[in-house]
Each structure stands twice: as structure tokens, then as C-alpha cells.
Image (cartoon, rainbow, N blue to C red; front, side, top):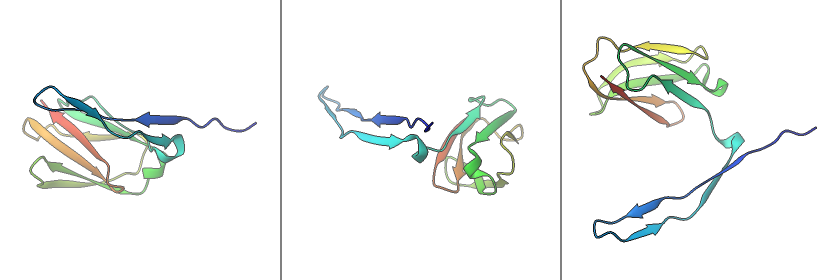
Length: 108
């Protein structure tokens, strides 16, 4: 029995200030092209838990401020990775993954 492959289709609806809009071209992604990456809770009070796809294991991520100041490097070494953010000020933070994906985290 073969595995089922999901295809996800995306397109953007771009709205101009004058109220007119246009649609982008449709882009499709197969399920094997998408790496799962979940971060919760978001907004963050004390700590955020990151649940990366197994393909991220062994890679590095970096946490930075919205202005680009790198705060720390994080080794992705488990499927549920808690990140303590209690010492950071409220604001927007970015978790940069090795493959270029960025997760936006809001610290309350």
C-alpha cells in the first residue's frame, strides 16, 4: 500500500490602498517538501516550546531580536525543545532555522 501525498495550494490576494486587488499565481507544495515546525504558546510569557520536524534534528537555530541582534544559538537536539524567554523584554523575536525558515515569536 502506497503512502498518501498531500498537495497544498497557495495564492495571495494583494490589496492596494485604493481598494483594488489582484491575485498572485498559484504555487503548490507536496507534503514531502514541507517541514513541520510548531512553536507554542505564542505569544510567549515565560517559555516557548518548539516542535521541529525530525529533519531539523542536529541543526542549529538562532534567536534574535526583530532588529537583528542575535541573542543565542540553539542546538535542535530533541523533538520538543523548550526555550526559556523569561529574561527577555516584551517584543518581537525571530527564531531563524538552518534552512532559512523564520518563526516570529511575540514575548508578552
